[in-house]
Length: 482
Image 1 (cartoon, rainbow, N blue to C red):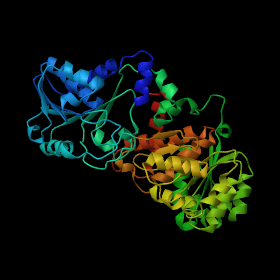
Image 2: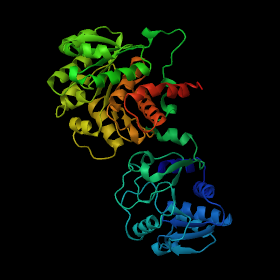
Image 3: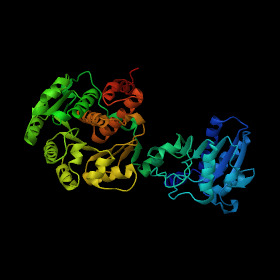
Image 4: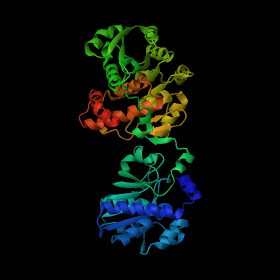
């Protein structure tokens, strides 16, 4: 954002104009929340975030709000644009005093912005505690003070906002956990930074939304048929562990793969056959049997891991799949089987032309890659670089990362999506989209978004079996069918 501001100024946009627009956007948000005459406390910090607060306070005062501005530090210590906006404010400036933050209808938090990387302390920390104790609603400027805007990390006191107004683009900390839980409703205000600035910066972090991958989505065509929609293969576990593969297979079929086959160990063929109708079952034995099935290049995407079992047998199945020309999705046991042996997995992935997608949750990620410090975004990128594969790191803030650095953060997953088997369905969604020829990063991001959206539509009480059946209305909205 510092570079975005600088590039905007280099293109002739006044930095004062940017601050004026930011503060006015905050004031407009406050006016939507409360009627004139309401008591609003504006907490201003010593930097440009505080300058935004001074602008908001000026606009609200002129709109007949009872504005009480509190400054952390001295007016004489303010510099640059913040000092100028303080000069333009025509009201009293009070020192930040936690004991005066009572009986307010709203607190505007303009203490510190997204660039803060250290915990709040002293008067700022005391003010956070006082506002929390009073239960006053908070409108945050840029990010709630104390929140790391890059990582969403919380290392000390943080104000929990009902609403956050940020500028130009949302920040990773708005959507990564735990930061997302502190921001409330996030509104992005246009403050006059040209769109071309983003192109020059070369942003590689995105919010996972249809705008990111819609153009790559493969919809059925009038000339198409099931053989042009791809053939997904899902590898089943033994007889006592077949359900996970069937969940993945159902997900692949429902998301649009033309054909889906469950590759079944001999002892599990009858179990799988009794439960499947539109999905085919093919028996196989050992890695050689799986390799033989994948010699049919029409089977162009394979999911392996759900219910597969952990150990050398699964490692050999994974290596057989990775020797094929099919796109490969590795989930669950397929990943845990390589715990402590990342070099073997990397060697199997290296040099492949077809896509490889890894879909670990946190525990599986650490087993394969070891402990990696940082946010989910940092860890997913690390995994992608280390493995040479697309990594979908699952959680409430699922991140999709590719080795080149591009990443997408998914923010639409509801709490009830954390249910047994949901990850198996997600693996099936990814596999089904890859089978249809969708590019790997976009397919993985689309699958994660569709997964979250289906869960949101269904609501509380969701179980994994519901997810594929909830997908059609989501796809209809995406396609534009009402």
